[in-house]
Amino acid sequence: METIKNLKFEHKGKLSIYLQDGRIIIVPLSFFPAIRKLSLAQRKKWQILDGVGFTFQDTDELFHLSKVLGYVDAPCC
Image (cartoon, rainbow, N blue to C red; front, side, top):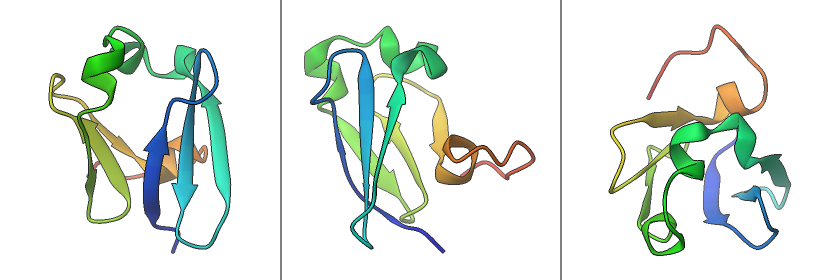
C-alpha cells in the first residue's frame, strides 16, 4: 500500500504528495476546498496520519490517500 512521506505546496494552486516509494502525486487545490481556504502559513501545519492520510492543524477535515487516487468508496482516516 502507498504511504505518504511529505506534502508540499511548490506549484501555485497545487498540492504535491510525496510517497515513500518515490512517486509524486500533484493535484489541484480545487479538489480540496478546505485546504484551498487555508493561508500559506496554515498550510505548513500539516500532519500525516498512519502514512495514508493527512490533515492540517486549522481544519477538522481528514484527507485519505486512496480518495486522492480516485478510490471513491475509500474509508476515511
